[in-house]
Length: 126
Image 1 (tube, rainbow, N blue to C red):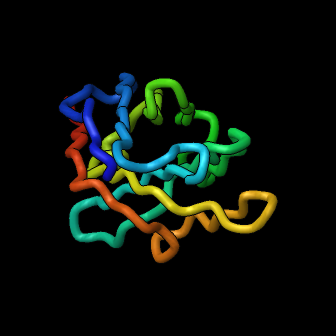
Image 2: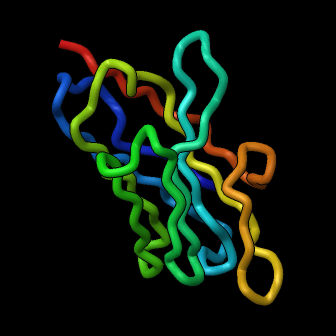
Image 3: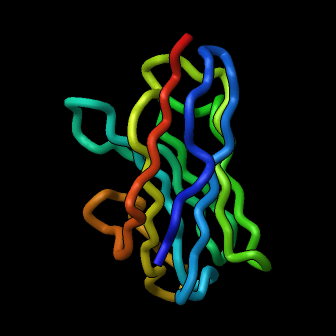
């Protein structure tokens, strides 16, 4: 399973770090992704990282502001979020996807994830 932590209230322009703790799964056999669902909107992909080779994927909306990283020793993936705006408000989900093939392919898509956390709220407001 995967469990999110670190959400909360932050002012516009501020930063917040989310953590995803993975238990019961081997991190280097999975890709871990962060997704967001804003009120009244569909869930969207933000970023993913491979537990095998550290390759990353970022959506344009967060590229240059968010940084995803992995600590295999702690079985944890972190999402550092900077320059936050009210449009970043929403419920943030961590999810895990099995890597496939000899090169560790992953889709980093909502429909491709195998395990989901329960989500954690992030509010960006003054």
